[in-house]
Length: 503
Image (tube, rainbow, N blue to C red):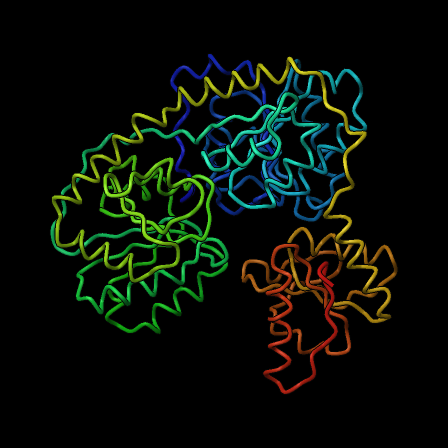
């Protein structure tokens, strides 16, 4: 299983819940994620299937017990709501009786659900209900709840913050809102007392936008400057892996010799990481309910985290079972770690308290009982209507981008190998626009093929100065624009033509 499988094994008596079939949609492809992990757990307890978008096959790290019930959908069609809707219909057709669909995050799964319900027979619509989940405290996920509340009669927030924000935005007589944090088993091992260097661990994606992993390098530098003896273990992979390792090396030998980057590990190895360490680090800018911290605390590892609006308050009692420092304040985090290094007895008390907190409040059985109660309740609510749904905002943004490309009269270069990028390529080709190149900054995307294009490294934009560049992302368009411009500036060239949904 993956480095993010911080969720429990199936319950021993899971047959009690198996009469509740689900279709769990995850758009994370082969990439380990908390959303995928939660889906694996639910498949271990409930009947039904996972529809895994952007995947050519079942991920190697998926649990053996549920692999046969994971339905991969190729990356070449996963951005198309109609193709996803057709896949949903095929799965629903193979399930008898009532079924609950969890689309989770992303515009495409929700647009696909709307399309599926529009064309479904009355019999199918009457036995299908849609359940919304907000996994992160970000506007895009709340926006989905506001847009699709008419077809999803209940929404769950994984943290008190997510729950209260959902309640404020959509709560009322016609929409149920529930608080349902992730479940967690308690590992069957004793908390180890450690002496010597402070043992730190980070488990999660190696990326910058949300996880802010560059702060870890700054933190390690600060600890060295304070003469704090420590050893840090970094577990995970992601788009920033190469730059993170380069930053560690640039920080000097006194830093790099204290840090071990393990990459992605299986379940057994991750358990050993928690067993062997004392403190879990969280430097993210936002989360929903941080799974790595939930998992660490269940193993008796003390969290030291930067303050975020969602999730930490559900888990960490500051000064009792962990320490929370101001958002972005690396020096404050270094001070906190320095204090714990000097007082190992206090650290041990916090570790014991952390484990007890999870044991008392995050039981898998309680989670499943609440979830089944929600599923029962939504099937008593009349089926929702698609009639008054607003148009898919993603498709509106794509159409706006392509209109700008058409108006330019130039061939197009698409920057962005995700769902938006593929949607833009499709629409450009439908409109007769010549698409000459496709780029991404994520090393994992380079070399992928789509509609006769092979994804190139972003530095190659310099080879297409006569084209119009498309920043094909709704979340990172500004950063993409700056990146393209910088390549041309570095070569002493004029800024190229660039369009986006922001134009």
